[in-house]
Image (cartoon, rainbow, N blue to C red; front, top):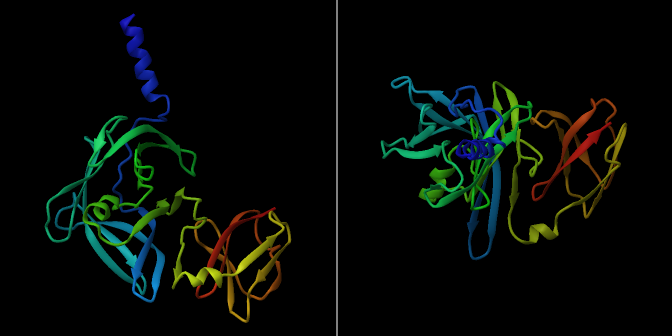
Length: 287
């Protein structure tokens, strides 16, 4: 009887897990597209902006067990943010800053439900299906935000989520939009609908000046119509991208627009309408 009960708990603990072989997090063939939002406040103006930055890793030449964290910034500038090491036996990942600070535990993929990690508790361990159909282990925390995915990192905050949380550095928050392995898109956060989300907003009045788009039909087969309210002579730009961020069409819009998109292949695309104060992103489906 005891053997049967033991087998039941073993099966119950693994029923949501597809595949138990550990997938390492650190690899020079991976890219993390991370959206970061920033705020600044003055007496006369509240300014917020957000941008997407690709993160990637390079192996350290002096110590090949360490990886240098690199962040691509505008203007072909690259920032180095510290070092990562991984113990694939214990399934732990450690972070050290660029100034020789104390090593910090960043991930522990051995956690189970009920375990604590710094100030959070694990409430569930299951699996998530990636875009290529494979499954990865996922560890969900009680704060409603942090969720680790084996081989990918944290869906909230991206690769270096804990560094920002503990040291209270900028940005205000960050979201992992997309994750690539060997140039293949494996993870996509459809809440933002793009792998490269950017915006800027100068103050609360900006919302009142925003453009309201009406897009139809959606799905479409040949032509797509777009109606814009409150244009008032503003320059409005349109971009259509694939889900992995490749631009396939662009145009300048007016209040009434009929776009011949018959050349597009069947599938799902991201349509971005923007001016200097406003950005609207939505999914469109070509039949």
